[in-house]
Length: 85
Image (tube, rainbow, N blue to C red; front, side):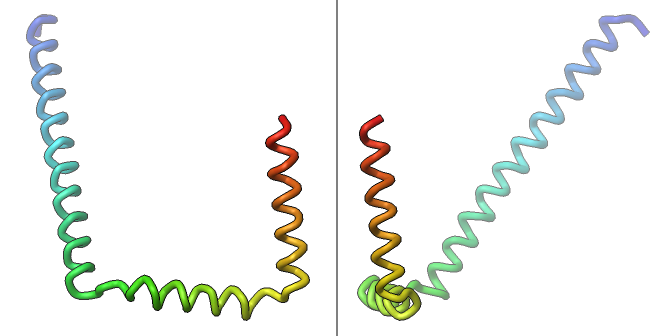
């Protein structure tokens, strides 16, 4: 085999591989979008008001007020120090 034949076969193999990868990635996009549609269709999210109320109730019940105050003070101090730099 001459070098031109080998280069031709290599180019053909490269193009075939690229087409297969492109097709599989396109198929993956379609499948993920279909799963997203399926999830939204059959498992709708709770309303935002209910979710916000549940999140506020869970956060206030699980963190004691003194600890919450200490965390807030630490975050404020950190942000103030970062803004000076």
